[in-house]
Amino acid sequence: MMSRAFLFPIAVIAVAGCLAFLPSYLDDYGIGIMIGLLNAVILATAWALFSGPTGYISLATAAFFGVGAYTVAVLNESVPYPLILIAAAIIGALVSLSIGLATLRLAGIYFVIFTFGLSEMVRQMITWFEVNITGTLGRYIFLPIEPRHIAWQLLGLAALTLVVGWLIRRSKTGLALRVIGDDEVVAAHCGINIARVKVLLFGVSATLLTLAGAIQAPRYVYVEPAIVFNPTLSFLPVIMALLGGARSLIGPTLGAIPLFLLFEWLSASYPNAYSILLGAVFIVIVYALPQGVTGLIRRWRERSASVVQPEEAA
Amino acid sequence: MSALLTVDGLTKRFGGLTAVDGMSFEVSEGETVALLGPNGSGKTTVLNMISGALDPSAGSIFFDGERIDGDRPHDIANIGISRTFQLVRILPSLSLRENVVAALAFGRADLWGGEAEREADRLLGLVGLRSGVRAADLTYLDQKRLEMARALAGRPRLLLLDEWLSGLNPTEMREGIALVRRIVDGGTTVLLVEHIMDAVRALCSRSVVMKAGTLLAEGPTADVLADAAVIEAYLGDVHA
Image (cartoon, rainbow over all chains, first blue to last red; front, side):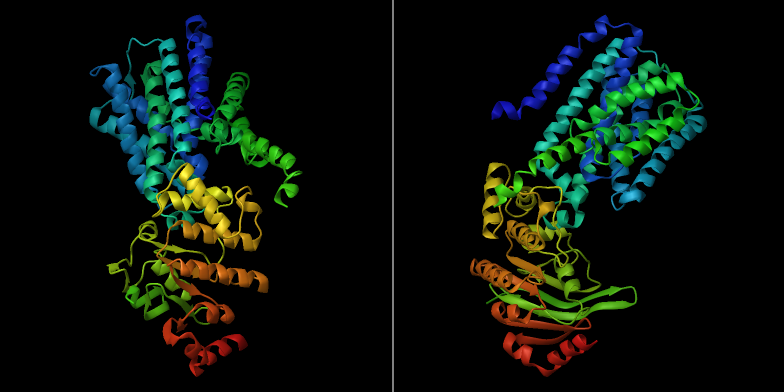
């Protein structure tokens, strides 16, 4: 019983441990693909920590990713690297706290649009600040960090994200999120402090997204708002998590891996039509798989189980 | 008997409409009180203000001597006021057990893990449900039972029932009345909104009647239901 309960984190750490050998053997292209895949898994899984159970579709991923990358860009010449990552996590948590508090009373499409607008606002504010106050727009990052170091860090962050997700699902807070996703009025009358749970989980999710941006910043070498606040970064995790099943812990990973490879191929083969194809894939997924792949598997299981169910109920 | 709930001058305005206008009444510890009145007289609005779903425009609500009007719903749940909803609200993507555990984990009971699961199963058994089924597959009556189990999981000192007995057939009604009576016998105070007078007569020693947001009559149920003004309010509603 005990061993089964801990199967998931043990499996995650074991898989991450095996994958940790890869960067030493892969060439630059292979490491690039590995970084892209891990980034997709982290963004989709971290996004789904909050948005999956609650159904609040956040389009602020680019804001957190960008804040992480920009923290590294600003601090890379003056502060030791591990401290930069800690600073990025703290700044990400603070930004998410303010966004979380600002969006508390919003639901549905209003929440979606508001988070998207906030994401753009953060980008414009940083652009304005850089142009008018510091007098620069782009910044250079010169850190002695190689791609394989980034791959290892991302591997660690991916494992951390999945284990954090597993811990949340086992906790009271995990149940609270699902109750909120079903019916906020009932949640409040059950004694759940909705505001606290929502802001807390939004913050956990955002901190992980910020770290993903911070870890990958050295790869850009040159950072400017248009690069690290790219709105596509907000949309891709949503599509990936929806494909795999945003309410399941492993679902976003199952969606992220094939979609990253598909988008990689599309952007290389059809660079001009890439955005249109991206949109088409989005529409197909939302119409054909509203519950994602994991939801589809669950429905199949239930259908085969429902044959025996009437007998059991009698 | 001391007053567990004291509602004083309670008023709720929605724009130009005054749904509840200066309502005052008390519910004593251990009592079962009916809140009656024609459709649209403001009964559910009163329950919504007591449970914290709505903020009153004026007036006050005291629970066990503490002023609670304007408090958030989760705080009110945690001092021991549970409710059911007029239009039944279950959590469809959760299992029956999880529906009840939700209230056990975050309410006054503060239970989690195996302890919460055992208590959830006990409460499901109390209302006549079994834990294996999915909430979304329940019949209407079973959804009402589930709501009751969830409300009881909040360990209420005051239970607010909003037409919980409506829509039941005569057999189910007898079971429902017996269940409410067991809950009352267990020491829970009940304030219920109900249109079914047989149930009100069977359960409630005292009744409070509303009309157009104001207090129309209050007293022992038999006297109140014989009151000419109350009969007129109801018949007027029936013929409308």
